[in-house]
Length: 419
Image (spheres, one colour):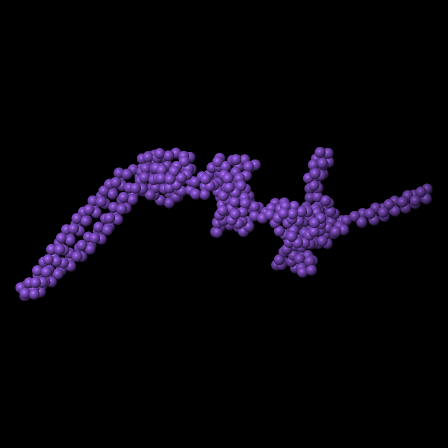
């Protein structure tokens, strides 16, 4: 009885030793996903949202106060250069013009009377001078005659200034009268009408109610006006190709365009506290169905790299590395510059590799230096990669391709793992 028990114990011990030996040979540590660096075309893009707006639009404002007595246009109507748009009541301004004209004429008549008086004073001065030469009049009489001439000359100069003043008043009244008729400054479309016949309009700034009567726009050239963050605007340049998607027309039909204007100064977004710059994208062939103020999503192509060596964008992380390529952690890394690195798994252990990146899109980033095609890098999980260090023991798993996922779904053998 003892011998079988002893033999069984020996066999179990040997099995235990073998199991422990096999277990020790397996890599330990966290499970990570790896993927090989491969070549593909990468395009860097800047995305922003804004609205459709005409390249050229004119706000038609009143320059005089008055009631609209004629409004022969409607919103959406096409107008031509010089076409009548608005007529404002003229009676008040006609009266002001006639009053200024009468005042000018009266002043001109007064000036003529003063010129006659000056001529008479000069003749009288010449007579008094002859009489004084003959010692028939006193010096005081001569001085009085000279004073009359000087006074008449001063009054004529003053009257001339009055004539200039009344002439300016007449010109201003005539201009005000002309401003009661408003005509279109260009060919275009009336895209906004803010007034009705019978309403009173007033001159002023655009934020004063009643000042902007209508807006005329040239719809032949349309823009998508968006705001780009200060981080992205440095990559945007004039002439870059762009795609404009207008939800109202369907997201599957982007409008081709190009960048035509980049603001030189930014505007602080009060909600997020960031600085944003206005960028305008001209549509190359605008859809006739487009209307001003439609929401537009702009996708600006800033750079493209063909046949680039790429890795998933999450594989590239920031670390502090010394001159020998060794990773620095802890307090020694504080205050030092971080560089782009990837982690490579070799024999169950991670190795850090500094890299230089190039063009990137939403999913992939170009590696210009530091990797060769086919090398496998750690791409996740995110929480593991965030804390990963060089020299750690890990268990590497190839990332499933889309084809593998599709086969698993068809067979029903889909494994879900929450890290």
